[in-house]
Image (cartoon, rainbow, N blue to C red; front, side, top):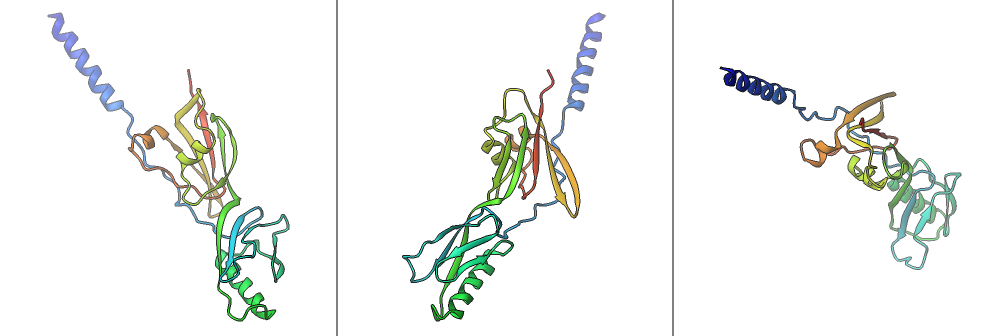
Length: 197
């Protein structure tokens, strides 16, 4: 008579645990806004077709300027790469240095755009945002989780339309392909919570 009762209790416990198993939740954050303007500390390549002997790699000075061959110092902070290429081209023609130059600009490092990784990672701090950077990549660049990290409670804070919004993400769910990795934007702050023992 007791055995059916035990079986029933075991089945009931199994049903309760199945119902309470955590379902992966999609990350509810506004989509990242891509910021491509040039800022202080950014490193870029500027190439002028046919002028291979000129320096091509430049770093934006603290005052937002760069000293270029032929055209001297220009304010570049706040410009898009294509706008800078057009400005340099116009200055070369204005100074009658080249008649119809072809100028290209490509960003190598966006040091002015950063994300913060805080909490239970090996190397917490500020990281330069890389094109296409995701949550997993940022945690990896911060040295990965430390031994007391709670991988199921990673908070991302993001500024969107003048407000700060946040989402709690399970990195385990991302690793297990249950939810997609989270693309980041400049200014995002990531905090890895501590595991409760």
